[in-house]
Image (cartoon, rainbow, N blue to C red; front, side, top):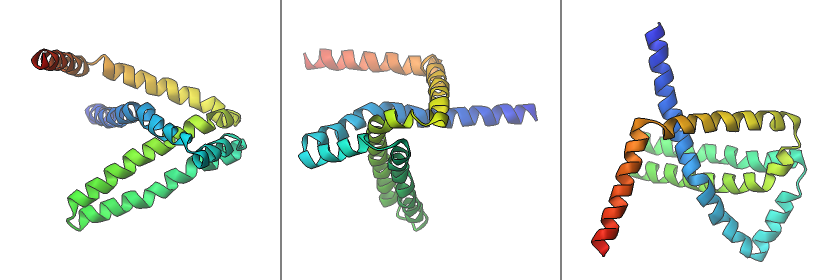
Length: 163
């Protein structure tokens, strides 16, 4: 039983770490993409309204997109089941990228209001610390270190090759 538990924990860790790495990689750059839209007057007005929401309104503004993406992901699974793997994959990746961009920007806009909710103010720092600990473990792993070394060597090779 201990071996099975250890295997399960390792598999869960790898899958969850991969999810966190994607979120971490995409969160800031994708939020910046949406932030650029604030140059448009209508979009800027919408963002100001979102930032002025009450804590409950901010929770709804942050939570509704999560719920609306669920049917899109189900449609992608349906397409996989119908043999249209490429279309399903494109839909799933598009939903993931678009959803991450939207949620990242919404979180930036609503975080001050969300932190006024006692349960959120209590649990968010715990979640952030736990997530950061997992990412630190990944970044200290031999595989990550080797991948970073390879990436740096490839960049140097490319720069040298381009002259």
